[in-house]
Length: 276
Ligand code: BTN
Image 1: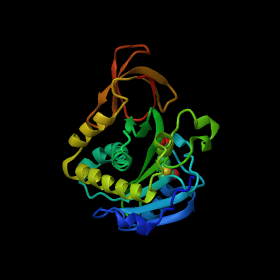
Image 2: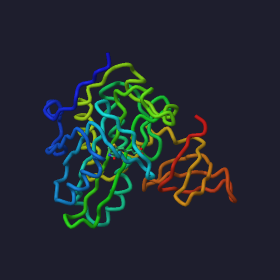
Image 3: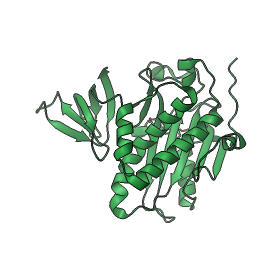
């Protein structure tokens, strides 16, 4: 028996405890991508806290121009429209921490609803038993005629069976069902996700990153690991991940390259944990 309940806005609202996030929730059976729909709504002036959810995506987008596998009726594909009213001198901090705190919020929501321990692979992969159970894609729209806004897209593999992943993902991806054999109420998980997101976003806006950075570091299984980092220019380096910098970058002591032992900070990369 493997028949998860459908997503339903009334069911989400029945446990939703947010002040602002989710005041508008648009739920679709199918979209190309919830991030695309949320971006379009943002350009049309959708308010801060608007939420877009789909049962399936036909062109789900991942980081680094990858595809996000998005079968119907089993997982969570959710995007939020955010409009901050922070002064210009805090914009860089906001933009660099949003992806990290979104992953933190998603991990806390999953743990609250299922009691399974989720760790974070820098910058914003959610891991369960070392395999990827979710991810975050943040997109900034600074020059929109409707005013600047950000879209945070979150994908969580909830009730899907690992056999249903494409062959190339089966070794590296997992789902909550696969780890627990418990069918998770996705409506409840969406409500908790929005709640945790709101807490983290409010904390970032009010007090900046210090407390969130501590919570993030505690969950981040990348710290202390030997990692391989694939950089945007196609180059790679290996080294020990030491810590997260004030701007959310990953600080690595290199082991490869022309100057091994150098400490470098990377803002974006594809990280592989080489050893735990
Ligand atoms: C990653 O590569 O880890 C990020 C995956 C983000 C997937 C989510 S699913 C909801 C939203 N819509 C998309 O097209 N992508 C994000």
